[in-house]
Image (tube, rainbow, N blue to C red; front, side, top):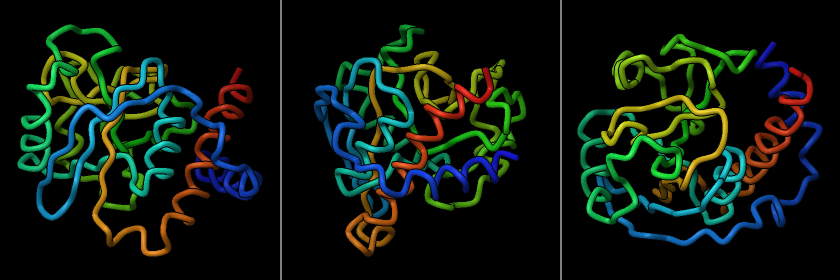
Length: 197
């Protein structure tokens, strides 16, 4: 059902323009590189996963897909000194990543019921990087730093920022394909919550 909902929303929202989806005042805190990719940490108070995705795509990238421990450690380690990531357990200190739940009810507690926005395989390594007790069922997207570590959390509301990944190979058409996907995800978030209520 989730796949059908996402596909239907993609088709229904293909005409939604990206302008205005994220009218907040996001600001880039820092950037780093790893494995030929550039990662940007953006602060954006109260940003949803859908709006973070739209902003990432609008900027020529996608929400970061940290698919192995070395990559996760390097990117998180480079950003830890910026002051954004603290040991505070609050949502304002979390950043969205490009993982989303494949559970049609947005309530998964299964660490294997996830996917990466760019199509990279979700592996046992990914499933094993959730913090203790996570995912706990408030699942719209994936965040990092919920508990002051590089472990992941499923989040269903808003957080304080997001990490954009750019590599120059996954957006060969200047982002138009991902722009459509971002529009679909934004519409899915808005409509999906209404449908489930």
